[in-house]
Length: 209
Image (cartoon, rainbow, N blue to C red; front, side):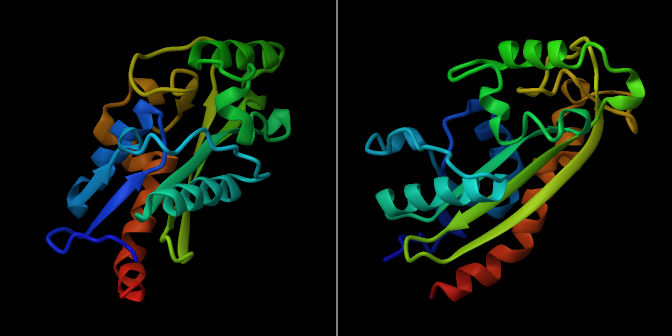
């Protein structure tokens, strides 16, 4: 049976070990009074193989496995950068573009190398995010968000994480890493996916009663 604390909207396990994502999602979900349970509370959950071919499939894979193991509702996202000139790469391999275990710096460096001969008009890209919420019973909902931009050849900014220092947002005249957290969360792929998720959560929770 799903474990829901009646004093809050819900207890939920955030199915990620990425500290940047955790911090960002905590900000985005703050007004929902969600009691976020970190993955560190559940050492029995090991590494989850992201074997899906799409962001949506991977988000569901992660959320389902964590919900099944912990007995709690689980929330997961899968997101990444899709570059038009690279046929959508890095795509679902964004977090490991430079190889398994690669960090942000290595992934950014590889992206710069792969795009070093492309002119500015051929550097269009989009950040894409799919969110999934899964109940241990198997019921689930998904939402998505997208943010358009351009990949720069030199990183700029110290905020955010991942490819944020290379992702230039024309509307604001700076990279995602140079935006304040408040502005970033209002326009980012993850922020938009969470905004849609908030609309669906009440109905989803009612369906679990």
